[in-house]
Length: 187
Image (cartoon, rainbow, N blue to C red; front, side):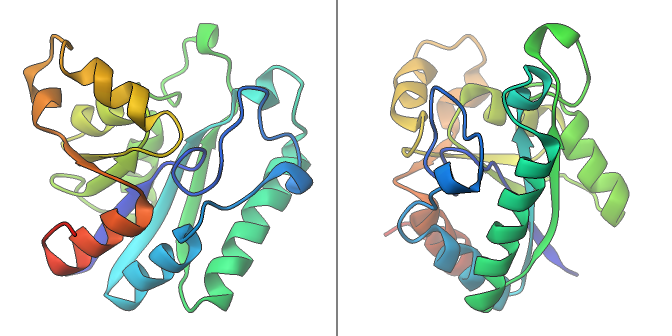
């Protein structure tokens, strides 16, 4: 049986920006993130990415720019010895009410449908509350990383009304999450 892991993009794989990542020139992988994805692949995980990209719906990011960023992500991971099985993104605005914008579970359900997998217990790594909520909605095992919005999210979890979020595994970054998933223990 194949093991899966689902990753958020901005703040987990690459540096995030309050002004959106608008093009490939602004996209910067976080230290160790590309190698972490490759290590997960070499350890037998299939990796999918699920990311909100409302900058497309706002007219700030051209769909072609998102595609170029994703091609570069796939190229870098491939050069490091890994492979991303699929990248799924929501281009909609928060007020659009779509099912694919996290915290709604549509992106994760699309991954499940595309690859015919049961998401129960699949690790889902994110840096924002919406990533964790989407993961819980489909039975994934949420993991919070402290990069991106992760430190602010960590502070917010203590008072969150959903007690399941109080038990979320919290790790420093994607490299630490990969170490945990591969070895079964945090460093």
